Each structure stands twice: as structure tokens, then as C-alpha cells.
Image (cartoon, rainbow, N blue to C red):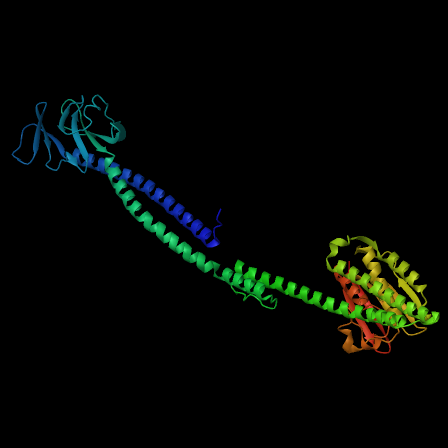
Length: 465
């Protein structure tokens, strides 16, 4: 089945909505017109009967008035004014005696209404041969009328209403195709205008896909409508994609660079040792170099895998309530046993500090900070680990009195594989502090560095309560 375009669907729905509105309006107009016409015809019926009642008088003898009509009645005459209307605008009236005898006028329902009682000022209906008639009776009140009473009955068919309604319906039927055409054209035009920004987004997305250029952005609109929001969200997505690709590219480049050194050393050692027969001592030294570089590569690859897992999201590391006091004290005690280069480690930990997080990641964060302090601390120096609970946050700090970090280097110290020039000769993968930053981000914590070259460094992690 062929897919319909959004423009087609918008036009169709707009046109259907317009047609529905027109149809409902037409039905309402016809209904209101029928009510108004029916009321108008009934009022005209009543008015005609009332006027004819006022045109009747009773006299004992004919008068010399040639335009008047004289109808014998008892011992005198019914004097009917020339203005009496027998038939006018489909309203027919007839003059009746008390016993129902028609004295004057016309009544198309004379047979059907024969014997029907008269009712003063009462409008009623009767259906004959599929046609509905409205009838109205009015008593003629004459003081000198002998022995009885007279009635005027008016009759009007509803065909008078039907003719006018049919005319309205005919005009509506003529206008409906025109309205439909206008609806289709206006719907198509509006859909085209509404979808113009969407087509612009589509063209930009296609160009990005064709050129593989994530630096391009969609020109945002300032109307604040859904299309503008879509463009903004799309640009944010492109920003994240570009950042991810740039980070991935940089990560791959840095990883290749970091792996190249130990690989080159291993190849150089093996090439050297295999050139010719050498003493056993040289073989041993070469294997020790290969072992050292292999362990370095193993550590680097393990750190890269750990960082990649963390970069994929926190769902891999479920959070729970962690006793950060116990975790900090235990980690500090374990790493104090290293005693590397005579460095002494002490800890000052507040009791009962609880945070929401992942114990494995928090332990890794603290281990990396302490390892970094050992690596760049001075011989026989001191490392201080502290955990303090404040009114609004929890502060974890690791301080050393080592070589410090130059001010110009501090802004990049948390980048992956970055190491200050002064520390290039030290052991390490260059991922430790970047992992610390990532773990802090996963926990919604903020990271702060205070360092002075030749004095030492302090890393602080602030956890929200």
C-alpha cells in the first residue's frame, strides 16, 4: 500500500474538517430556517385570520355599498369588507356558522375537517396525502349577531416552507463543491507552509548524511512552535553525536599512541635478542622488559575497557545506599600498606556518612586518587585522605605534598591519556583521573582541584546529600 505524504494527510484532514464544519453549519442553518419559516408562516396564518375577522359585520339590510359582499344570515346579512382575503400567499380562509356550515371563503380541507370542533385562538395541524397543514380558528364576536356565533378558519400547507427550504438547499448544494475546492486548495497551501521548516530539516539531515559532516546544523526558527523545538532538539542530538564521535576518535588516537610505545619496546627487544645468540643474562633482561611492557599494556587495556563500560551509562552499575565512611576507611587502610617510596598515608573519616551510589565505582574513584597521589608524591612524603559531612554535601578529599600540577596543565588534567610533561616519565596509563571525573559525573558529584607546583595537590569530590 502506497504511503501517503504528511502534506496529503494534513490537506485531507483539513478538508474533511472544513467539510464537516460546513455540513454541520448547513444542517444548523436548514434546521433554523425551517423553524423560522414555520413560525413565520404560522404568524402569517394567524395575522390573516385576525384581519379577516375584523372585516366581518352583521347588518339587517343591504347597504348601498357595491364593493362589499353581503351573505344572507338569519333575518339579515353578513357584511364582508372588500379587504377580506379568501386566498393570499397560500393561506385560505373560510367563514363558518356555529354548526359548521361554510358561509363564505374557501377551505382545501373542508371535507377532512367537516365536523371538527372549533377552538378559540388555537393552532393545530393535520396531515393529508403526505402534506401537513396548519389550521387556525378564530371566533367572530359581534354584539348584534342573532342566535349563535361565527367562526373563521384559516388553512396553510407546509409546502410553502418546503419550497423556500428547497431553494436554500439548492443554493447550498451549488456552493458546496466550491467550498470543497477552496478547502482543498487552502489545506494544501497551509500544509505546504507548515511543512516548509520540516522540509528544511529534512534537506539538512540528508546533506549531513551524504557529506558525513556532523558540524552542520539546522537553522533554527524563533517562533517557539513544535517545529522550532524539533530543530533545537535535532541540533542538540547532532552536538552530542559530534561530541561522541570526536571523543571516540580522540580516544582511539590516544589509545593507539599509548599502545604504540610498549609495542615498539617489545618488538625492539625481541628483534634485538633474536639477532644472534646472546648470554642468558641478556635473554633474562629482555624478557623482563617484555614482561614489564606487557603488564603495562594489560593495565592500559583493562582501564580502557572499564572506562568504555562507564561511558556507556550508569545502568551497568546499579546504585544503592553506600556506607562511604566504611568504604573510605577500608580503602585508605589497604592502600596505606603499599608504603611506596616511604610515603605515609593517613585518614580522617567522619562516621555514618551515607551516599547513594555504586560501591565498586566509588572504591575505584578513591583508589585512583590515592594511586595518583602515590605516583606523583615526593619520597618520604605524606598523603591525607579525609571524608567530611557538611550541612548540604559530603566532601571526599585526597591531598599529597608531591610535585604539584602547573596551572596551565590543570584544565586538561582530567582528559583521557593526558599527563603533564613533568610526569611523562612516571608509570601510569593516563586514564586514572579521567575515570575519576567520569565516576563523579555518574554520581552527580562535582570535582575540584587545588594544586601548586612544587607544593602538592588536593582533589576534592563533593557529593550531594
